[in-house]
Image (cartoon, rainbow, N blue to C red; front, side, top):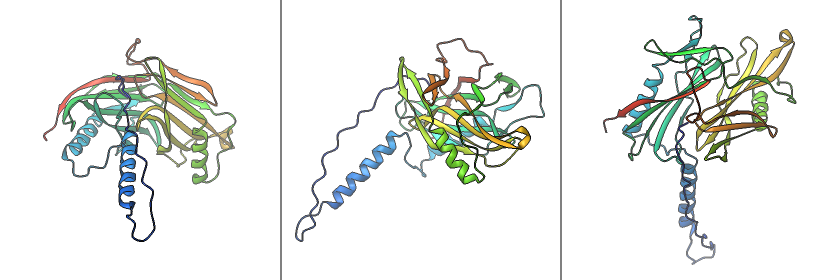
Length: 309
């Protein structure tokens, strides 16, 4: 996501809770302890980057409508084949924020599909210093998960034309055969995802990313050679920085099944990913190196916005 200088947030040390007394006539501190626990839970939730639920916040609702409508402006297809137009998801797979960044931010992530399989990821986010984020800048981000060239247009203008994904359709060694039942395969995919680790680098300092063991998207429907698949994310806050796509696929004309994986960056920072402790994927800082629309990842400013409060 946005490559902005970060600052660690300090958390005040908690006071030691008073000793509870269950003896008659003694003052009970249970309400105070309950309040303290609720405060701790609220703080931990915020530090994870998950915004508190604000169902009655009209600005947040308008911002979601704006972000989603911007995503719907993009059209993606397999390059050279207009009949293979990708279909955007009806809903975002994630609405994210990242509390360790300088500015406030609020983003949505959509998948673009060919059949059941995600081929591209599109993110649009709002960024700004104002408290309720009613105005600021919009940014867009494109990520390829396809081994084939894609092209993305808006109003007929080509914006992005990746030749391939970052690391795509790699066979996963030392993995058990895909299980027969979907629930069992999901357990397998979670276990396989834990074999991977990912970091991003800020000022050349590695920052270990957190794996979300609940996949962002799951497609347990057989189509072609694909039996099952799930998209996992390594996050900062709840902001995905590296994507991991795991798929159970048929081989030998359908006689056997095995696992394969794809990895993709989802940030302007430098990233790397390891499998069983060995680096298998890396990407250089996006804004500090030459870049072209043919790259598997693209990030760009998408204009300013102002919402009625």
